Amino acid sequence: MSGNQAAAEAIRQINPDVIAAFPITPSTEIPQYVSAFKADGLIDTEFIAVESEHSAMSACIGASAAGVRAMTATSSAGMALMYEMLYVAASDRLPIVLAAVNRALTGPININADHSDSMGARDSGWIQLYCENAQEAYDNLIMANRIAEHPDVMLPIMICQDGFITSHGIENIVIEDDSEVRTFVGEYRPGKYLLNPSESLAVGPYSVSPYVIEMKRAVHEAMVKAKDIVRLVSEDFGRAFGREYGFMERYRMDDAEYAVLLMSSAAGTGKDAIDALRDKGVKAGLVKLRMFRPFPARELADVLKRLKAIAIMDRSDGFSATGGPLNAEVRAALYGEADVKATGYIYGLGGRDVRVEDFFAIFDDLSGLAAGRELPYCRYIGVRE
Amino acid sequence: MEDNERKGGAAIVARGYSMIEIRWHGRGGQGAKTAALLLADVGFSAGLYVQGFPEYGPERMGAPITAYNRLSKDKIRVHSNIYEPDMVVVVDETLLKTVDVAAGLKIGGKLLVNTGRAPADVLAGFGDIDAEIYVIDAVDIAVRAIGRPMPNSPLLSAVIRLSGIMGRDEAVHAMEEAFKEKFHSKPEIVEGNMTAVMEAWSSVLRINE
Image (cartoon, rainbow over all chains, first blue to last red; front, side, top):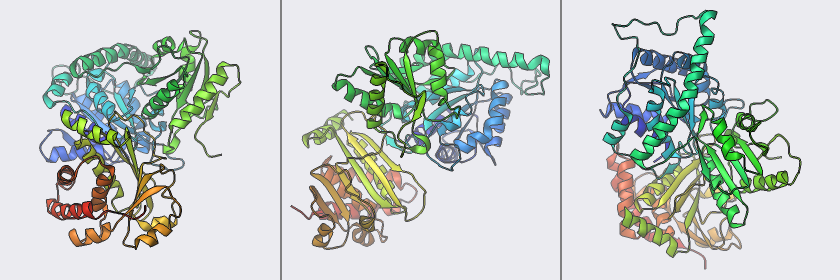
């Protein structure tokens, strides 16, 4: 089953009240499968075929504010067209679920995987979880509603998987029993909602200066609490279905001296590289960050502090001239907490293949870095020179 | 499932592999991608861990495309393309002039060409290569069995046979199940495809020593 099929299966089992979506490669198949489920009577979701992604998110905002479960899917320029409404969804505290299939943002135009689309939404107030494979895309979607809808959170959430690499690749996957998934996800009982005649409410009006910063702080506080809820829901998921998820996956980190840190599909390739390096006696490890928003800074510092050197790998460039967002945020997490040498890499833009050999080169760099070699703050890897 | 898991995994191990990696070369619209995805389905039904994925570029009819399969007894984590395949499948022989289809092919690996040309003619194009070279005229089989020059079903059959992951009866059953699923909206074409896969199973031919 492909990652898109896996996401669609999760949506079928969740059976949300509303899906509003506009097609864009490589996430198109998700609403396509879902509309077939609807036509076949497998779900009773209201499927709203909108005319743009801006409208898709707007329709989700309307539905969620009215008091029902709303979901959508998108990629790349589609997500960029949603940006304005992504901020509205977070500010209005609407627990919308977005199945994101990461694709490069245009310039040059390209349909393949990188994280520039969802990284552009990193400051919007959405929770972001990243997936290595189809199984994780499925599992994280099953957990998404409970995280987003928790009364302490009430924030939208996007579940990100890599375009084509996992969205269109066929892999083995475990699909859980419908009724068990529905029991796990549970019914949505909104606290305050527009269609409640006994409690009138305004959602999303113009806010004057005396209110805006309080609303933003409320999002901040919800994001702080979201960490606990992600942990609790993930533990619950582990008990129900046997697959364990934390804020990050630590692969062969217990005695590691050098490690790479990255997200999504390339982490799988990295694990094969780690095994090969371990066979050669290199104390190599890998940290796969699952949760980018909220950012688990303290937990990351705790995991990384004993290393001699760390490579931070971004699948998007922030064009700060100092690398991508992971590089900046991981270094910030280490500041004052640990004296670990770090170097950043930009990799895999526009679907550039990431090979096991790329990781070997990175670990060569890391041993040099630990031995005192100067390395740039950040550089590109896998580039034709 | 557990029995199958042992069977499929054992078939791979017996052939000296822990994983079989296959690279397909075709042109957009010929079904190389579909064949790779179907092979993943069939491998799954043999209890294997599988991957099937195309390399997406500009999507247009006739452009060269590459698709990949991994079939393994263990969980597959790697998500990169395949650079040193155990088997290469050439869906469109006109690519032999422009693409180095044998690039990275493992020593003693298998190379399957869809062609109606004479073996000596095909061999001449490969020179001194340490690989088992096979041919099948999948277009001819498809035209006679399905009525259209769609070579992917007969090629799928030939690839499964060469991979050794399952015997004929099991493979035929698995392909039929995969076709029924894939073509659920047009069940009338399953029969022709099954005729094609059975003919292909017995007609794939090794042409070098």
